Image (cartoon, rainbow, N blue to C red):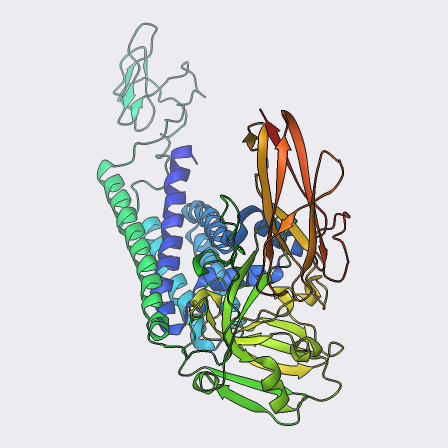
Length: 573
């Protein structure tokens, strides 16, 4: 098969796959966005890939890791679809089998997600059916190219017709069946077939005609093929984007916008003057909602209706309780500043943020269900089935662990857990920060491993003392003279006692700490450096309120958080 033929065949396969994926999106509006083939298969990939690959994706793409996964999945699908198109030209059944296989994978992925039912198979089934139909249209139907084989019939090859009575060939000429007779002697013209000149071998009883080259595709056939593929690809894109748009319209943004949160019975302490140094490149003391990091396993943001939302607290308890969203809003609410951090945050990383949270103290709800004495773990379960395991003691030891309904003065953003999420100071998010929470189950660490534990992460995840240089940034070019070095440090639920900076392995210099609301938030720090010309290496370390200094030992984020000193290199002119 020629290069041109493969391109057309690949286009047929890609068009079929695009229609399958695109049409599945509006169908998924009815069955739920998690049932869309790309999302369902992507969710299986998230659950199945090794932790090293997940961490690599976070390192490379940060909070855009989900978009990168969906794009990568689509590109991979396109590659296989192109192959199916090429195979279909040789044998249509092979291409149809490939489309069917992808449909089966989509069905299996959708049905194995948490909370799935049989209707979740419909997007993949309908999409695969239409994709198969499109492939047939291009390979054997109305859009078929003429010819699809890309090679015309080879002119018959056989013995040269003898010259004699009854032969149309004149003396000195040669002819084969189906070819016009003509002179074959030197200097005379070569016989011509409808496909073009035909080289002639010397006369003899075994002389044969060479095969002709590829036939030209009929121009009308080509126009029909390309027009059909263009229309169907456009339809697939419109259907896909339209399906996503409709899914958003069916979401809960309107319900969220209609909520008016009650005032807290216990407001948060005011942010003290000077807590935010307001320096260029320095992270603000309070992270705005749009800039707050988001790391989770949800490829599509769950849309949870606050009117139907329920929280069930059960397991090893004296009495099980269920709460509605209205129940929570009717309770005395408290407001607290709490800094959250992701365990995947590298030394010097930005997967951390500080916000003002409004919610119900979790210890009050746990007291109402009367946990068993041996229930040392509270498993938070999200609407999408994700789980995290939090030490029961951390929710009842007096820290401001909240069942949060508000963030920075407004209802929780949908992508950050609306309508309700868990916030626990001092613990990494993978063991505490359950978004879109619907269950709290009292159990034991010995009896249940939450989502990340079988994947190589520690069951316990206390936040480690960390610090970061925000300004100047690595590889910045500075001017000799006074330079303000500044950043943030954190040790939630313990607090920061001291931050130190050093230059070129020299002595540690203590930085000035800005005031802060409480030990549950990060703190900004600054240090004045008289910079001299040359290339310099800056390092920072922090000491928490217990007197423990941040370790120099470098450790990866797995299994319980990264360690080491944040180090940057700058050039001073």
